[in-house]
Length: 178
Length: 286
Image: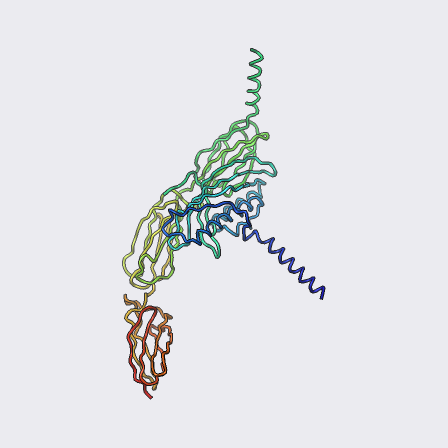
């Protein structure tokens, strides 16, 4: 009887441990960067309230998992919030980091998102992001470059089963306005 | 005087000797095109190059032009080049923009639509270069809708931030319509199945067969004359001495048919969706 109870406890402990180990691969923890979304000039489809919340939450989680993936050289972390070309480029960057020993570290200081295009059928949204970042380039343990910078990104997000995914993430030289 | 010169010139000379090598990059580079970074200084240094899909380092000779291969800058975005010489590092940034448009990606929704629906079909086109970078400079995309019967409809739309879109009204005749987006010789095609709309002029007739009563519709068509799809549900309602009974029947081979036991005189009503049809008054037979 005691042994059976002990077995159950061990199984529960292992299952709990496995859950927490696998957790970062699909979900972001608390501490996502601050994301503000402005959808006032969005068209042709108006944004739904729930979509607005999802975009804000999921874009923040995408940045959080991207920073972790690049810091830890773990492309599996990209699975949760990236897809398509954005995921392919980041995976390529992580492979390069592993090969060279050079890493890029982001300290995220917040995003001002502006939604600029929402497709009529609701299957793609394009946004501009002004991201405030501290960027470090590290070779082994040595920081070879550090900067505080505000970068403009053009972002394409598409809906997944239960969240919005980043499909394209491209820095632009200046704001591209229609 | 000598003391003054020594106190100014010696630190200045030391500063010049200790100054790190510098790097200069072109303000903008095209994806996949090789170019060079101008460096100052002499001796060996280490070049770091980071950007989208890129995190590399290599030894370089300072003071020379440093060649960056086209395959190191295939992805559009901001790159940082850092050059380090005996512990001192200098950085420069440059932007890589997309190459010439080479691919168009087309999203069309829905894949199945009723005929005669205004603005029911939407097409969204994304323009990419050969490295799958979104081309941000305005590009003309030609949209074309080719119905099964009738003339094709064409529209040209410029992209904004690499994206353009159209809305189309579905044709009045059922059948597949090809929706295409093209960019020079490159094109993408999608097919939208246009199906009949709601039933129109729904009519039923009585049919006695072997002493049993059947109610049967005439071929069910929409208001444009397209046959309503098999499987569409038609509701038959019988009101007689035993009360009111409703039976839902799917259309098979263009008609819906149901056997209804009668008790005395009965009224038979028919409906499909929001459309109601004629009413039958039937006298029951033994």
